[in-house]
Length: 79
Image (cartoon, rainbow, N blue to C red; front, side, top):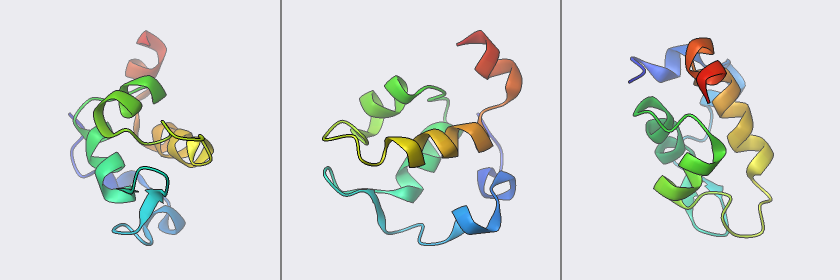
């Protein structure tokens, strides 16, 4: 569990939290951030939990950027 995930994001990534980051599956950025905060530490786990980047994958890079910013290094090296 990640406490206060928004505190870990650069200002630019805190914008438009309620807008769909994944347009194909209509998944808001906030839902993806919450999934990461709750322990979805890989792209595959994000896809399973939220369906983000499960369409044509155009948001994959943005989801990966959120993972880079939020996932603790110890968890990232375990994956």
